[in-house]
Length: 95
Image 1 (spheres, rainbow, N blue to C red):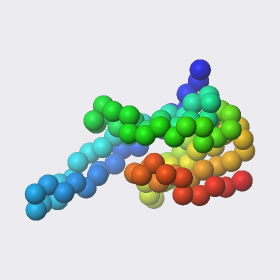
Image 2: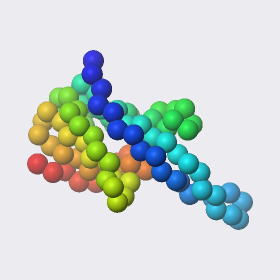
Image 3: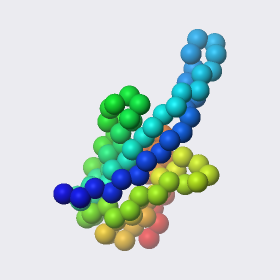
């Protein structure tokens, strides 16, 4: 079983009592051979989300946007999906 891996390092704003605190968050996203994506938070050591079979076939690539927290995945099905990485939702399908 093969994996495609993308890593995102970003500062996440968290509200803590009346002050905002910047917390470093490290996320890894793995694409699987069955078309699923696994969103893992390294900082918290937990699986954040598992998007099952979003591609028909193997996930062949992952790329992070250089200007936002968007993630792009592509698969053997010929689709490119744009993801909101914070909410782990697909925001756009591109053929």
